[in-house]
Amino acid sequence: MTGKQLKNSILQWAIQGKLVPQDPNDEPASVLLEKIRAEKARLIKEEKIKKDKKESIIFRGEDNSYYEKFADGKVVCVDDEIPFAIPESWQWERWGNLSYSIQYGYNAPAEETGDIRMVRISDIQHGDVLWATVPFCHINESEIDTYLLQKDDILFARTGGTVGKSFLVKDVPYPSIYAGYLIRTRYSNMLSAQYMKYFMECELYWEQLRNGTIATAQPNCNGKTLAKMILPIPPYNEQIRITDKLNQVLEQVRRYGESQDRLDKLNIQIHDLLKKSILQEAIQGRLVAQDASDEPASILLQRIKEEKLRLVAEGKLKKKDVIDSTIFRGDDNKYFEKKGKENVCIDEEIPFEIPDTWVWVRLSNVVQVNPKNDVPDNTLAAFIPMERIDATYLSSFTYSERKWGDIKSGFMHFADGDVAFAKITPCFQNRKSMILKGLPNGVGAGTTELKVLRPYAETIDREYLLFFLESSYFVEEATFKGTANQQRIISGYMENKLFPLPPLSEQRRIAEKIKESYMRI
Image (cartoon, rainbow, N blue to C red):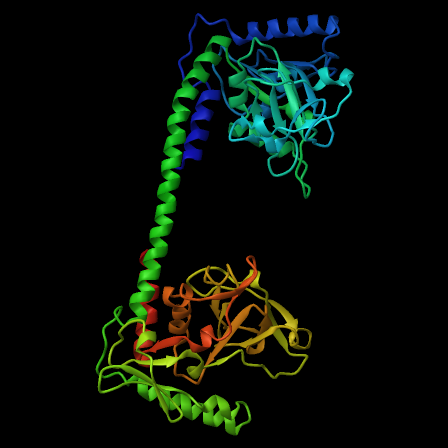
């Protein structure tokens, strides 16, 4: 159970009368509500508050059902609004019946100087007002009293991403009003302000708020939503016992929640580190055992060369792409790279040791980079923007269908069997990558922020290649170029990256072992 779930459960016990015991000596809530009605009537008579035309009384009839009686004498059954049973000394009531006013805030631009401070939604952080940064506004002096904040007022956000969030005003160090996106509710001091605030944190409050919220691009609710809310009212003394208990318990819940959050983050970090470790072991030849009967990787290089020559003969590859470098180990145990007639020592580039049956190659020597498709314009194809590619260690993507003629220009080409990865930050670090398969007619196009690799014939297992591209060796050693928010791996990084190439059978065993290991994490 998370800290939030535990808090919700405790608040639910509280408003159901299950958190603290009832005391038969407490003055029942029915008497408390009569006193509040009498107080409201006096304030209305003194013209200090306005009369609510929708004022009502909720009571339980002889048939044990709940009814609501309105000022015009109308009585309706409200059983379907009562969510649970409460102790006999408690009463159900509408927020509007308890409130002396539900007032929208003042609309004015925030200023560095002005007539009075104006608290905005953004000034309320983690249950406190950041008074040092609360701005000023200009307002007619005659209007100030209408919006002036007092101790025990409750503010709640009526629009935007924080809609419904509430704040109990515990002190007002400076004369202040509140801004237009807030609503202030003020009620009798015969009610516990803290109890009212805790109600605005419980699920019953949020459920009623959701039902009364207008679903738009900027979700919003109004004062009528709050006024119509039904809430359980305990005797005053029990309200105090409840809030004292909640103050005590919820502090422990907060600490528990913080510990749980740290543990969850640690588990995510451990899982990520385990995946990185598995990939590193894999590309170093330490995840599965070598098999002496496997055809060595050097044979794969010969097949790749033969495939390149065939593609050149068919006009699908340029001759310059056949000229590869050869990496070998000399008699002195050092690594050399042969380019044409020149041998260059690359010992400093070799990142780790690999098995004898493996070979080091430049990645661009064993795959085609960003190949092109050649299909009729009316061919149905896949279209994959970046947002359709999942950031996971396993290949996952979706696509929409488009005509090839509409997407062949201005987008990156790919086909079934290609392996692609994002070259832009942070998608690159988040391992946005995929093995293309199941595409309409086997072809597609998409975001230009991809690098697409097409292995030559059946020489490189696609899953092994994908896992290599997700390894820390490939991802974390990359260098980038561009602005702070849009950096891409530098040209040539991927092409010149040293790639540890195992025998094909071992590549497949490695890929299966990685997937098996991921399932256990």
